[in-house]
Image (tube, rainbow, N blue to C red; front, side, top):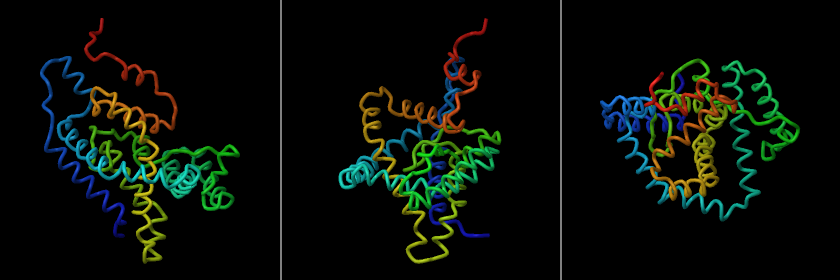
Length: 266
């Protein structure tokens, strides 16, 4: 059995730590029927521990992640940041291709394969996204999404140290995606510093993602009555859109999202 890559091992350790902390801080289900219905709908039985982990994450963000993201924005112009983002997205296309294939989304997988080949050649390694210009739009595909398409439930809401909002299904999916990434195997084969390319990519993606959300997170922290609850809601909405490849929710899901759990059926 192959040894997990450094990135996957690191993620597994962090995820395990988050799950351990979370399991130690379960919320007590309320006895009131209306409150109990809302509690079950929220699906966040580990909220006390999740809030503590979020506080830790925001502390790390305040002293490290946000300053690094601001420095990245200051010293790398928008044009350069776009090139870096395109390059990182292109490296992830094989993982998207595999997951779209596993989901039976063959048209999306074909588009992803075409994008990767076209951008790698004519986009000089993906630095320029030439594929989008000719109508091959970027697709989504991760193993958490694949598990969703196979009917695997998401499980309770989790906040994982450093990595942020997730759930058991997506946490497993992220680890699997890291393990199946072909560029991690290429880096390990060549040895030397190349074997750490997965970690470098993970750091670069994190910095880029944080830079692009500086204002959004600042506004949310400033205006939200309950930052934790707002972040949980926004993440779930965003993730639900990703899981459906951007398609609108089925009518029954849409009704459930906005229904009042305390309303009595006539």
